[in-house]
Image 1 (cartoon, rainbow, N blue to C red):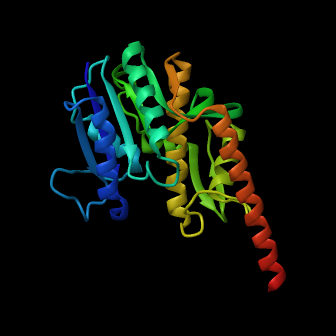
Image 2 (cartoon, rainbow, N blue to C red):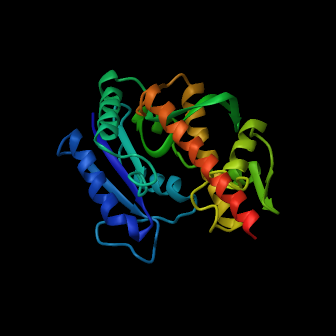
Image 3 (cartoon, rainbow, N blue to C red):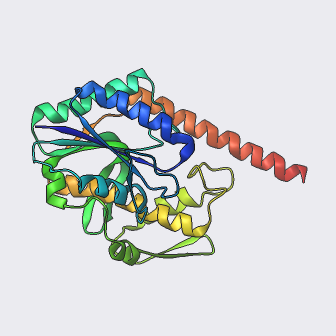
Length: 269
């Protein structure tokens, strides 16, 4: 039984600190843990890093890392992107939760996935798989048996393009295989109403980038739905219910503040 780490880097502002933080985190599982760094920014690949092609962002990069390993069913692979310690809490308690949850995945010897779990208000469907939750993929772990069963964690581009056809006038044009509730969630996340929080890059990104982001969101949701539909174990490494409620309240308060700012700016014009 072995544990591996695959970190995807792209943004040079995050790369050095992300590699250092990921190394420190993986050290918690023993000094013999093999770590692979995939760099999707082909203009800035350093020695020891493996170049990725960025076709499906982090997912195709993680698949590149998987292809370099001989993974057995009882192995565990930890995946992360270079923002795992940014845009969210990554303090001592967060690290401890992830460490304990991943070790539980190792000890239980059951096939499954581990990461911060989010519940959906209803069941959603993605490409023939149904779930009411998903694991956030900024940092997550999969057992070798799951990886060997799905072979690739990155969905084929042809499949993604049939599900998400295009974006026209800030509206995602959907194909088939994605339930309406998930379509609505992704649309609102990438194109939020004025004063409503959404994707962190929503003010600067063009439609082509958002189209790619929509496909990666779909890929993330599909992995969790695939695991649930195959009765694989899902271990939540996220905060407890009290902290989740606090963070949700903080998020809603930020939305209210943003809406007030927008109204005041509109009145001042």
